[in-house]
Amino acid sequence: MRLVYVVDLHGDEESYEASLRLALEREATAIVNGGDLLPHAMRNAFAGQREFLGRLRGYYARVREAGLRCFAMFGNDDARALVGGLDELDREGLCRRLDGRGWLELGAGWSVLGFPWVPDPPFRLKDWCRHDDAGRRSPPQFGPPLVSTPTGLEERPADWVAGLPTLEDELAALSAPPDPERALFVMHGPPTGIGLDVTGDGRNVGSRASRRFLEACGWPLALHGHIHESPHVSGSWFGRLGRTTCVNPGAMERPSWVLVDLERRTLEHCLRGTGTF
Image (cartoon, rainbow, N blue to C red):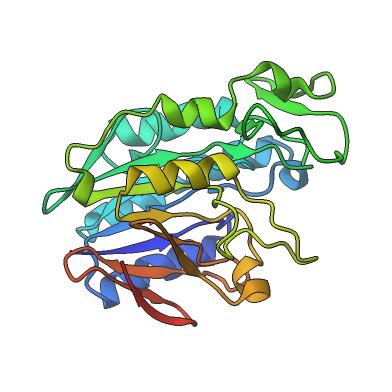
């Protein structure tokens, strides 16, 4: 059983099409998208995200017609007020929403769960942002916080995120998978410290709470994204935390992808070689 993993497509239509072509060429059974589905929130100002979400219906319909399954969730750059559109695609049987609905059946005994939350970055949209844990605060910000509403983006007070549950809290609330040995965890933000969270200036900006969680849970595979340039800076597109293999394909190529074979437990990156989990 194979799946194509992509992330951080940010509304690039050719990347979506390339993902479908690849899945068919490599005889995959599913495409999994780990977040940041839509055009950049600030550049396309909410209305553009709404319009693109509508266009995804046609794409996912063609994916289904090709005999493939789709799984997707929003990421930190996707307006949360639009997530009802992803729910509609789910109800229509076009694309399963990964987050917020518990573990989903993948096949061959495997199940998958999504987790869109990320440690608060400097970017203004805060819909999917949390403080990492009780000891961490926000970095210097690019401007006042923004959250999405049904009518558009609205400003919030500085450090608005401080009043929300932490990322550590959100992780603690997750349910256990049906079979921990066949659990695929799609977490938009990477853990810190294994080369998957390195920015262009060499900083590690991943999650400490996620690292502790993955070390403890022992699920075999976690798929990430968010830090587009990290594999180019660190040279690492996967690493291990205890029994869990963590993957960030990066997003500097269009598209970056990883082919996951769940039965053989192998990984193939579009440019950077192969691995196992």
